[in-house]
Length: 148
Image 1 (tube, rainbow, N blue to C red):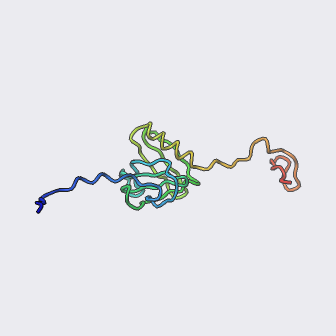
Image 2 (image 1 turned 180 degrees about the vertical axis):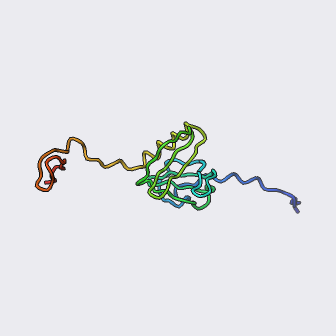
Image 3 (image 1 turned 30 degrees about the horizontal axis):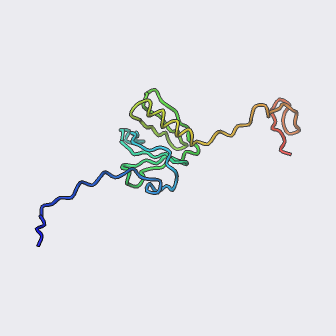
C-alpha cells in the first residue's frame, strides 16, 4: 500500500500565451500585438487594452484571452502622432481613437505597422493630367487621359 499525501498541491499554471490569429477570432495574420492605453470616447479616462494589428484592422481587448471589445477597420483610417511623445490617433469617419504606448519608440513602432496596413492612396499622377480643351469641360479645367 502506498501512502499518498492529501495536502499535495499542483505546480502553478503558467500564464496564458498571447492569442494567436485563430484564438483572437480573426483568422488573419497578427502583425503586431501588445499592451497600449486607450482613451475612452465618453469616459475619457485611460484604459489598458491588449491591442492586435492584423492585415485588415486593429482589435482591442480587455485581456488577451477574451473576446475583442472593439475592432477598427484600417481600410479608411488616418493615423497621426500627437504632441505627446507616447500618443497616436486613429481618425475614422465615426470618431477619433487615441492610444498611448509606453514610450516614443514603441509609439513609432505601432504607427509604422499601422501605416503598412493602410491601403495606399489612389492618386492620379500629375503628369497624366492635361489642359486639353474638352467639349464638356471649360478649356482651363484639367481632363483625364482617355482609357481607350
